[in-house]
Image (cartoon, rainbow, N blue to C red; front, side, top):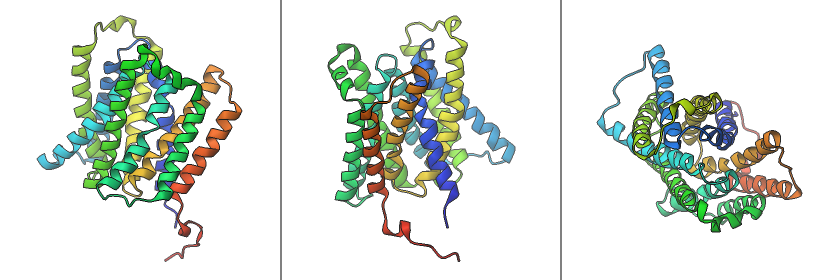
Length: 301
């Protein structure tokens, strides 16, 4: 039988995280990046706390499990999410999407290196095909890599994808997403929020609280409710059902959605290059996820 929860989780991750590049860009227009990241995660932790208290599920998870949650939070939230947010203060969204799209390759190679995933030329071909599609979309933007104004942002983005890939593999390897996902997320969000808010006061030259616009604040709240709570819950659930490479490949769909939003909101044109790139990406995703039993009828027990 079909796992409708898994299907819904995958769609949620693809759609919601596909909007985060735009939301982050809007948020950092008037709010310092570390404040955006920190407040986003802290609000997310408060939402999870309310959910846990309403369900009477809030409890101490033990020092060992807390250590796992802190490591995951450091990699996926503080490093990956935080540095991506900082990078978008200076790096174009197209370039940010291009660099972020390389994360599935790191996940695949890392999973193979530690024995979590068997080496498969088919899967590797699928990853390369997807990445070729991303290059096709942003071919004209590759020259931005030589722009000194983007240099620091690019460094942050490479740190971000390394953190994301490491966090994805770490989660699957130690199976720390098992158990009460809401409880784990609370501790992850709380830790990241506190650390990033501290970073905000340390690394932000000026706070300008009075200059924070309603538009940027709304984008930050959206990132908290949907980009953090909804998407991360779905992401954790998906990792319990499918491989890290299959989950990380959603980054390519995120990029397509980001481009679509650019066309819808910023009046950007969808060219033949975009259509060809979309075909490459979808084919790559299919190659990685293909299994013969996908087309076999399953008996209902």
